[in-house]
Image (cartoon, rainbow, N blue to C red; front, side, top):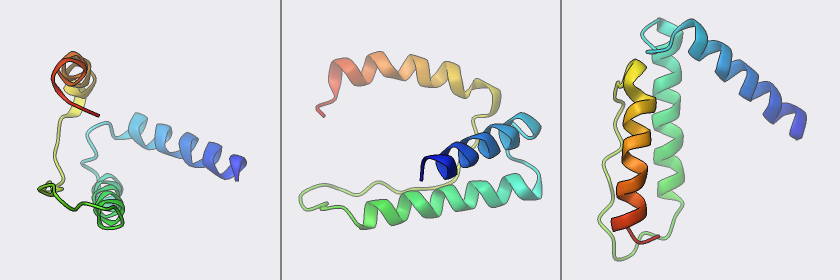
Length: 81
């Protein structure tokens, strides 16, 4: 399935390049699909003993990389994996 993963990766990069904030109809559909997939993955996990997060669509836009980079040191220092 490696070629399909590579194709999906290329398609995702193109979609982000054309609509970085996912505000077009296609972008909104991609956002909804991503939320649905994350919810489905969580539903398939053993979540006994934890409070489930609410998975919702959000918007970070062009600041997403900076916010993600700032988050990594916090996770590394304070969260248990």
